[in-house]
Image (cartoon, rainbow, N blue to C red):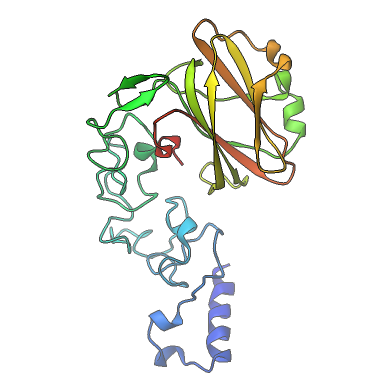
Length: 274
């Protein structure tokens, strides 16, 4: 892929009547970038084929190939994000160092800490100890919602649901095995099966109320909406119990993978994670 890109770059310059030695480095970079979402960071802090800001999905993913660029090498270089470290030297220390937290590092470079609601966000746009929030009808100043489900990506392969009890998959609930009863917001978006950090787009939100000892089915539809209701097929799962509820998900959109996140009303979508 690297050789193909190099040849393509030379051919492009030749067809444009340019000499690689006679043009500025910035003038040689593609804008828009023809190599987006391929697992390589092609901006100047990576492989250097494309202009700044034209391959954001790859260049904000710490698992991408950066080659010998400033973000992937051992130089500890900086990204274009206003002097923020990329890669981040402060990973896995209990502090979110991305711009929505302490602000030392570039987006996508401290994913473990910044997807953990119990991390320290300082005064960033993530959790602030002075902000407070409403969760299930009560106010809390704890470091995370009472019970919630971060982003879960769901296949569009309908055969996967046939093997699940009730034809649906239980959400993974943080801070508890089930949800506390109360008011929540469901976020549903379109994604793909490329991995746990695949970008999520076309996100829609739905306000719901979870009742005591209830099991709910959240189904993505081919029309891009979500059907949310109690479903008798879920009786194969155990009862949530008094003051608790559970949500099970399935994807009825055969064309697209979907992603779902569930947060108590009042908490910002940043708590969904990546």
